[in-house]
Image (tube, rainbow, N blue to C red; front, side):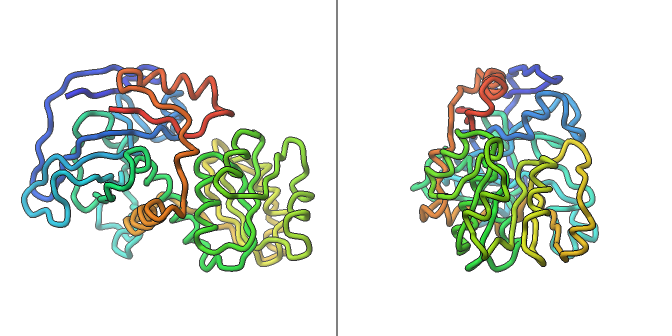
Length: 339
């Protein structure tokens, strides 16, 4: 079978390797589509601190169940499916209390464990999430980032009737804004520095947008929410200035969910955090329940992903997909690799 291996930053080799076979408790998936995410690009540039080389990338994907191993129930050959990429120990304190997504020994397929950039991908049955035939393979490859949004918004508790700000309108920010809408948020304001991303937010139904390169965030928030203000912010840009906008402008007692991945250590105005009793909350990845929520939202149309898919590349042009993102980042959201 075909396999794409990143042997070093900026270099992908295509190899022919033996096809795996499922053992007890395992599922063999025939990969159809792979989504490229921002973390993959960090690996491409050699800037991901926890990824050794060589590495088989790919963790956002859709597939067809090829075969199942002994003892596997609830999954059958021919089904459309994806799978969560976590490899966990099951023995540490987070795992034992049910927080396996922050396992002390967490490995993520495509980073610290082999990913799905190959024709056939073997994974644990417990990680497999089937999805209906009514969902396209493109949508199936988007289940993983929608699960990120499902988990992040769940971290905020009840969103019904709350005013929400999303800072950063990339793929994850867009999906978090849509997820907040699904969970009953009253008004949503999304920010970015690229008009392309803000236009995509409007396209999926997020009406209030702010280009912070041209407009002060405080002015946009005042225009969107008036005296009511906002009680919840999702920082998705991974930029100190965005985090500071949230800290300085959220209402007293408000909550800021930190979603973005920071390359350095941002400065936080802890005097304001303290004085206004703000809550800074981290969020990482997802659990299986978040995957199931993502499938439900995609199946019912609550979350739209077709407008976010910018370009398709064939498997043989895997490296060119990365170069395309490098060249067109501000005007690109999701790039898909077709097998």
